[in-house]
Length: 224
DNA sequence: ATCCAGGCTCAGA
DNA sequence: TCTGAGCATGGA
Image 1 (cartoon, rainbow, N blue to C red):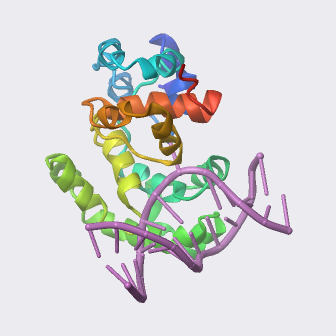
Image 2: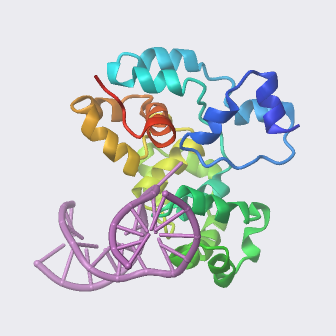
């Protein structure tokens, strides 16, 4: 079943889900049950939004991106695509990522990645793909946040921000908020709320509302 | 042209 | 532990 059809059937906001912070990778050949999990249908986002609504500064962002859901993304494609995203612009790295066959990553050489526009990240990718072979997703999923982040950061090209993205999108750590350039801009406007929001149990979800609002819609939070 | 992009690595303090 | 330069390369 196609992901898009699943979204239509279940009244999901395809647009918001694709344009928030997760790098959307079209899931190939998923069953309805698999898509149910992929789109995180067992999580009640109305409840999450209700909790985050305690922050007045988030009202506009939540209203705009109310359809956002945090996907359950496959671990390795998530790592690879976020390594490529670092210090890169969205248009460009999207084009690069679309060329990659995530089911056959081991076949690529450094030159292959360079040709696909990965720039100086090409050697990181080859090295990380090798190291990922020895990583046990099951083991990683049992680590706490700090342990998991530390483990992920042993991968070349993975620093704190990329690690947090992987934790949020592949390990569903909803309390982890990736701090990127957009969020840094927001933190100034959020003022004293910023620290509290970034340490909230749903900080990662809040970050997605903010990212979507800033990057995609308004460029500034418009806080009164 | 020139600066920047969903940062990271590495050296030096 | 902290700071900053340098990084490939297309987009704006």
